[in-house]
Length: 398
Image 1 (cartoon, rainbow, N blue to C red):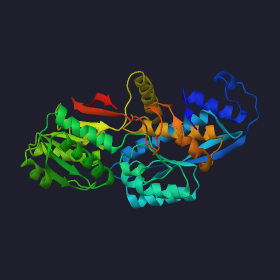
Image 2 (image 1 turned 30 degrees about the vertical axis):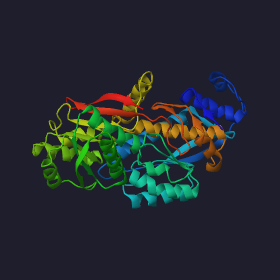
Image 3 (image 1 turned 120 degrees about the horizontal axis):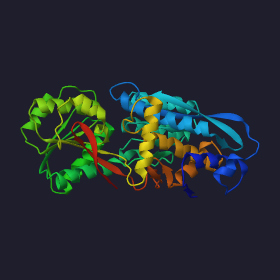
Image 4 (image 1 turned 180 degrees about the vertical axis):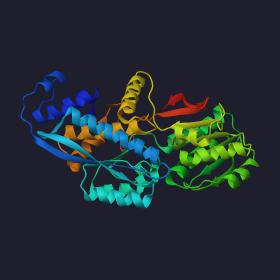
């Protein structure tokens, strides 16, 4: 079964009513005028999980807002499934970026019999939680977990809408050597599934294109003092220092690099591609051309207008700008509900095959299609740098 989409929210609402009417072709305008009887609304629960407490709570809240925005829009437009008007209800949970808390929350959502789950944010929570969702038969779409293991466990319920660490870390490794002309590279990771995973892929790519890894160090995702490992690295005189971890650690690390007089370029994955990193590093800690990161996603061409429109609406609704992955959460909710509408059922067993067959869903983050593992096809990466204290885009690659 192949699922093709060619518009956005208005058409999704149209598809909802079409499914109830049992018609295959009709315009959005005629759907709005439909007089087909609709039963009283039923409530469909969709879970969202992210760290809304702890060091990366700003990213978890950003994700949650993306889910709420999609839910609110869908409810306002009206979603009809199996002849019933559906009211979508978001069950938002906090995993604190902690694997144990993540599995506890996952079990809570499974027990609540949610129709689907969007999350988790971190690979370290997404991977262990995925087993629980798989056992319960609940579809899960992660908008931001990039560790390849997530979709390589053989779970039919696991999907992701961003590129993985093989693409992300690999692209950054090649960029360090081929574009930044780095001959020696130091690597630090925070020992999390995400941090270690992206650092490993980065290291492989550096060595594959002729670069040399001169130091490998590690810290934790809660550390604040990096003077010891940075002093060790300083003695190796690397051209580039790569950190596999999140902005809450990367920002202070950059600040301490400046204090130690380390002038090496600093690189990282999507966990560092935030404005929060710049704030944590300090006003003048990042020189132009010193910092590089890659966001696991990206739009180009005509799609830019849709993304800018989303960001404007997001800012108006929540009085805060998009931080990182809110658009991918938004799209994850929309693609999940679209599969329910197409399958004419909120039963996971019935709509899961339709979700898996999604092809060219028109998300604000670009067209969404899933491969046989549940990974997004032709996933994009956005290379960014800091210029005059602001994140700027270098290029979008696929």
